[in-house]
Image 1 (cartoon, helix red, strand yellow):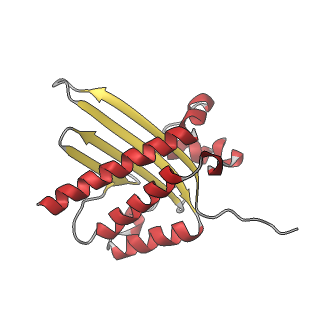
Image 2: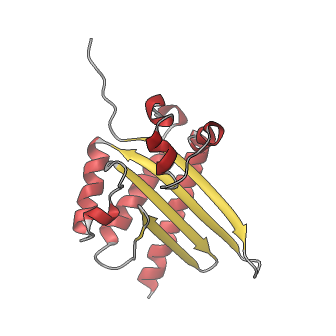
Length: 172
């Protein structure tokens, strides 16, 4: 019997927090953690290299094939960070923004039955510290964060945020 090996994106989790500040502005912060393998890992590393970003700052310190994305939105301003390092938009970093948008489209277009979450990952210290990079998550919250419908919806929202950042950059 042939062994089938999964490559691509897996063990994806997503979380959003909405708050209202003292000026009644809605703020949104999103976190997404993705395990990249195969071609997707190669494409991400190639985009990182083409963007001239220091690999040590944009590589997950817990496991180097995990991508940790954090976004923050207030009306009129958006920010994206990879592994807790802000990704500034400029001519050099455009390949990274393009790759992140590609990954978000791939995730949002995936069929819910295609989402892979390894049980060994789900109940590991790696998951428990990777989404927020420092806090442990209870099992109920962990299951909610890996819900395929919510992950797809989150990927679509992050992709829209990337588009807004790029549109503002090209409008300057």
